[in-house]
Image (tube, rainbow, N blue to C red):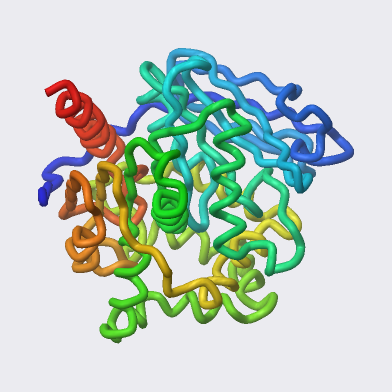
Length: 362
C-alpha cells in the first residue's frame, strides 16, 4: 500500500473543448444512427469556459487539449441508447471509464486527454445519466442490468476486452463487471469504492460508515430526493463538490464556476435526477454477492478525505483480489479523486499499466 501526501496544489490540467449541438425537437440520445451526430469536438489550449442555453438546444463545454475527440451513442438490442465521449484512435486498446454519482462523462475529462495517446478512451454516461436514455421504472436499474450494459457496450464498440476504470458508483459497477465477466477486463482500476463485499460487510459492523451512507436510505423515498437536489438552484449538488465537508479541498484542483455550471445544466434537465437515484433504489435487492473474487491485476486509488467512504475499507479489499493488487491512498484528497488530483491520479494509472506490461515481459 502507498500513501501519498499532497503538499502543494496540483496545477489545473488543461481540458478539451466540446461543443454539443443538439436538435431542436428531441435530445441527442434519440437520434437515429446516433453514432453520426451533428457535433463538433475541438481540442484547444484555452481556459475552461461553459456556455449554454437552458432550452436544451445548445450546450457548449469549452476546455483545453490538443486534438479532436469524438462523441457518439450506442443502441442496445433493448432499444436503449448510451451516450459516450471518446478520445484516441480506433483500434488502440480500449480504456472504458465509468463515472459516479452525481456525475456524468465530464468527470473523466482529465483522463480523456491524458490516455488518448496509447488508448481508445471512452467515457460513458451510465444508464439514466446525462444524454443516455433513462428508463422510467426503477426495476430497470438493478445491478444485473447495469453490469450487462457494460458488457454490451464493450461489444458494440468492437472490443472483447478493456482496461476498466470506475469511480464511486461506477467503481461498484466496475468491480461487478470484473467479477461476472473477468475475460473482458484486462486490468481493473477503481477510484474511491471498495470491493462490494467489503462495503456490505463493513457497513453492517461500523455505525460510522452506516451514517456516512445514509443517503442510500434517503434515496429509497420516491420523488423527494430529486426535489431536494433542485432546491435553491441545486445548492446540494454544488455543495457536494465545493463545500468544506464533502468537496475538493484547498490543495486540490477545484472545480471552476464553469465546471459547476456544466453539472447543474445536465442535472437540471427534466427528469435528469430520477435515473441516477434509481440506481440506489435497487441496491438492497442485489446484495450480498454470490461471487467475490477478482482475478485480474487491480489498482485501487483512494482519497483519504473521502466524506462518504471510510478509508479502512480500502485495505480490506485486498483479500478479494487474487492477482497483483496495488493500493494508493492520497492523504489530502477528497472523494472526487480523479478531478481533485488529476496529475497524480494519471501518473499512478500510467505506472500501474506499465508495471503490468513489464511483469508480463519478464
